[in-house]
Image 1 (cartoon, rainbow, N blue to C red):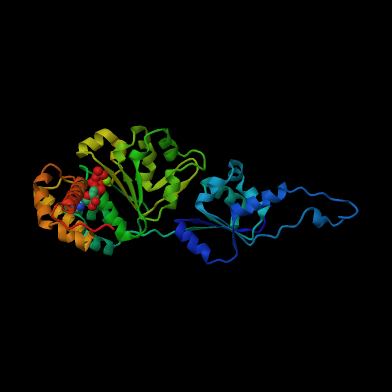
Image 2 (image 1 turned 135 degrees about the vertical axis):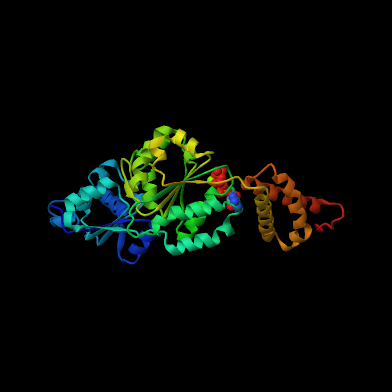
Length: 386
Ligand SMILES: Nc1ncnc2c1ncn2[C@@H]1O[C@H](COP(=O)(O)OP(=O)(O)OP(=O)(O)O)[C@@H](O)[C@H]1O
Ligand SMILES: [Mg+2]
C-alpha cells in the first residue's frame, strides 16, 4: 500500500530548492526523522503487566510528519539498503508531504512505480542564451579580452542556435590554443552574462582510478559528474583541460555531447539548452581529431581557436594589468612607484611571455620589488618604533 503521501521531486541548484522549500513552514529533515526513529527503536522499555495495561504506553504513537525534506547531499548519508528500498522508508515515516532534491535515479523510478499518481517533478529553469546575451557578448568582449577577434566572431555563431526556444540539446564547443590567452576567461565571461556560479571541472585533477567512479558512478555517496551536473547553478558547463582525460573516458561523453544526457550508475541528468565548453591546449584541429578520435571530434558543434597574442596585444595587456594592480595599491604605495616605469620595464620582458597568467605574476613581482626596495632604501624616513 502506498499511503496518501504527496511527493515532489525537484531538479536544480540547492539555493533554488531552499528558496522553494523555505517558503513552506513546518518542514523537517528526512535524515533527522530517520535518526529520531532509529533512536526511539533503541530505547528499552520495561512493562509491568498489571500496572501498564495501556497499549499506547508500550508503543508510543508517533505524530505523522507534515513535511519531510531531503537535499541533494543527504542521500550520501543513507545506507545502501535505504536507497534500494526508498519507498519502504517513506511508508515507514508516512509524511503527508515529501520534498526531494536531486535524488538518485533509482529513487525517482522506484517512487514513481509505488506512489504512481502522487509524484510531481519540477525542473529549475536554467539561464539560457538570448539575443540580448549575444549583443552584450559582442559589446563587452573587448572589456574582458584583448585581441581574439576571431574567437568573438566564431563564438557568436556557435551561440546563436541556443537562442531558439525550440532547441532542447546543448551546444558543445572546444576552445583550443596555447596557455594563458583567455580560454577560461572567455567561458567565465559568457557565464557571467547568464548568471549563476559557473560549473567548472578541471579534468587534470582526476588522473587516477577515482576518475572512473567520478564519471561512471561508484557508491551512491561518492562524488560524481552527473550529481555535480544536477547541482549546478549555471547554464554553462565548463570542462577545463579536456585534453588531460585519458582516452578510455571519452566514451562517457558521447551521449552527453549528442543530446545533453549524462547518466552514471546512480544519477541521470538532462542539461537541455545549455552551453558546454571544453578547453584544451591542442594546437590544431588535426591534432584534436587525431588525439580524441573521430567519434568524439565529430560531436563538437564548433572548435574555437585561441591565437597567441601579438606584440601589440601583449603591450595592451601589460597596460591593463599594471593599471589594474595600481588601483589595488594603497594611496601611499602609489606615490612610491611609477606606473609608467613599471610598464616600460615589462614591455621587453613580455617578448618571451605571451602567457597573460605569467605576465600577471611578473607584474606583481616587479611592483613588490620596487615597493620593498623603496621601503628599505637609505633615504626613506623610517617609522619610529617605540
Ligand atoms: N587575451 C587576453 N586579454 C586579457 N586578459 C587575458 C587574455 N588572456 C588571458 N588573460 C588573463 O590571463 C589570465 C589567464 O587566462 P585564462 O585562464 O583564460 O588562460 P587559458 O587560456 O584558459 O590558459 P590555460 O590553457 O593554461 O588554462 C586570466 O586572469 C585572464 O583574465
Ligand atoms: Mg584555462
